[in-house]
Amino acid sequence: MENVVLVIHLILALCLIGAVLLQRSEGGGLGVGGGGGAGGGAMTGRAAATAMGRVTWLLAIAFIATSITLTVIAAKNSADSSVLDRLGVPTPAAEETIPALPGASDLLPPTSSDAPATPPRAD
Image 1 (cartoon, rainbow, N blue to C red):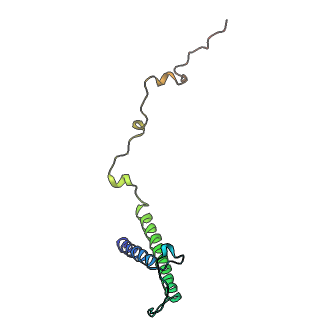
Image 2: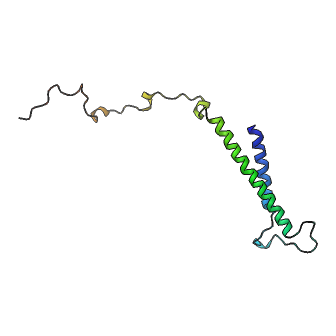
């Protein structure tokens, strides 16, 4: 199912790129794009721009829909496991994650077993 949606998504992306590139430039950028002059075909002028605009909007909506669908499918597939589970990497034990530093026991306060039996007197 995911592969089918992915293929449709890629086809929509290519069609959307083509539709955007075929549209007439409204701002007349770089002096290209032409107008609906004499000798036009069946769709000229504003009708062609409206039709291409509608095709572009339909392709964009379909592209967004397939993007959301692919996101939902990927979330369902990865909800039960992590990347490390799929790679087979063993998880370290708790003792191995924090290595002991040399002399670290000097920095810690004394525990009850290290404390003197009687407090020192202040004479």
